[in-house]
Image (cartoon, rainbow, N blue to C red):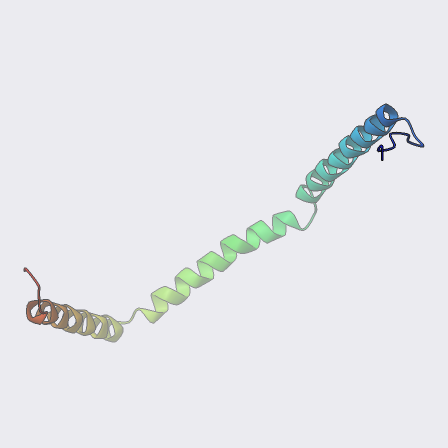
Length: 95
C-alpha cells in the first residue's frame, strides 16, 4: 500500500510560518529579559545585599569573643592531637 504524500497546506509556507513564529517568540523572550533587568526593584535589592553582608560581618565580629577564641583554640588543639594519635595507631599505616 503506497504512503499518501498529499497535504492540505503548502509545506514551504508552513516552514516559513514556523520559522517566523520561532523568531518572534525568541525576540519576545529576549525583550522580557531586558525589561526585567531594568525593573525598579533591582537597585534596592542590590543595595540590600550590601547591607545584609555588613550586618552578617558585624554579627560575626560580635560573636568572636576572647572566650570563644580560647574554646576554638582548645578544640582545634584537641582535634589535632586526636588526629595525630589516630594516624599513628591505624593498622597498615606507613607513617
